[in-house]
View 1 (cartoon, helix red, strand yellow):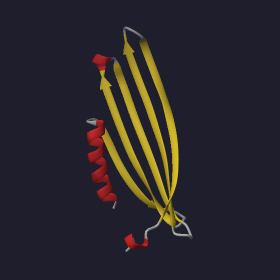
View 2 (tube, rainbow, N blue to C red; view 1 turned 60 degrees about the vertical axis):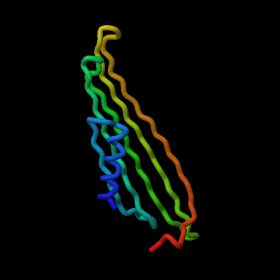
View 3 (cartoon, rainbow, N blue to C red; view 1 turned 120 degrees about the horizontal axis):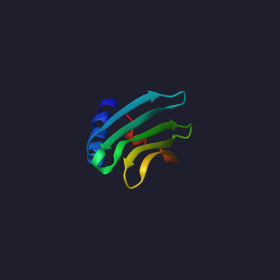
View 4 (spheres, rainbow, N blue to C red; view 1 turned 90 degrees about the vertical axis):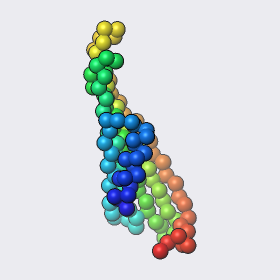
Amino acid sequence: METKANEMFYKYAKLYYDNDFHTSVYFFDTDTNGFGSCWLVKKTREDKAAGIDEGQWDAVHLVTTTIDSQNKVKYRLNTTIFLFVKSTNNAHGALDCGGQVLKVREDYQPMDPKQNP
């Protein structure tokens, strides 16, 4: 599953990020009745003509899946985006800017026994 996820996520990132990016997907066991996965993207950019000395975009998507005693599945998505830009040009001088955004979403879905092996 991890190999297929890496192939699929790379194809998605190629459409969205174009060039100069790296992706990785990892799956792991949890202490609860479920599993987790981590979807990573790193995009770098340098464009001296545009005044961008260095730019980085790091996206970390952490998904955990837990099945409770009533056969409901809890999905939790934590997404964190880190952005850093270092720029120098004659119009504004030197600029180092960075930040992060964190979003969390949870959803419960009934488990369909017909789709379980």
